[in-house]
Length: 90
Image 1: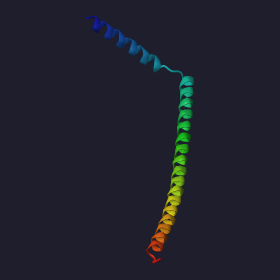
Image 2 (image 1 turned 135 degrees about the horizontal axis):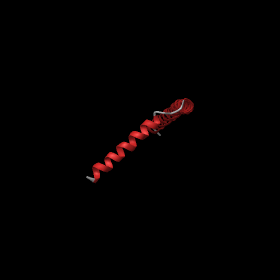
Image 3 (image 1 turned 180 degrees about the horizontal axis):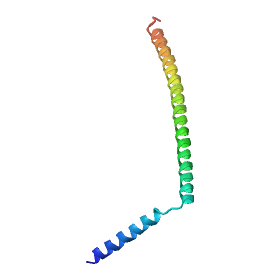
């Protein structure tokens, strides 16, 4: 029985809260809309920054891959030259 009474009290308090929230003034609604606009603009700016960072990261990774490939090719050529020198009769 106690649970039913507490549940009814909670439900009535929640209903009062919803009815009060529905009575926001036009000024408050405008302020909240402005706050939402600021939040949306900040999110968009952050998303753009993350996209730019990802693109920059990709470019740096591509450059690093190119350096690695060039180094591997040079090392392979040096090893091949060493193998040829080793096979030559002395």
